[in-house]
Length: 96
Image 1 (cartoon, rainbow, N blue to C red):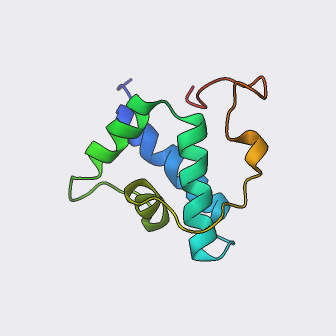
Image 2 (cartoon, one colour):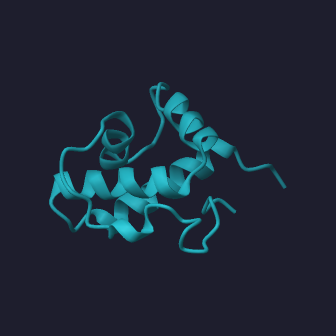
């Protein structure tokens, strides 16, 4: 059994988030993806994915890639109450 590449796992998770937001207008989708990743991923996870995206064949959904590279101007469809998972009694990361 081979070990799963941690970058592949991060790409898969980011692509799942992008798939969820795909039905929203692009600016709201990007904002929602950005907000989710900032709220629920550790800085190390985010930095690792950004570094991986420098590779030619990163496999990341274009919406997720955009969400990682910019500070969105649109309002996210995610309620503000969930921007701090600790206040909601949730864990700091959805990696697992």
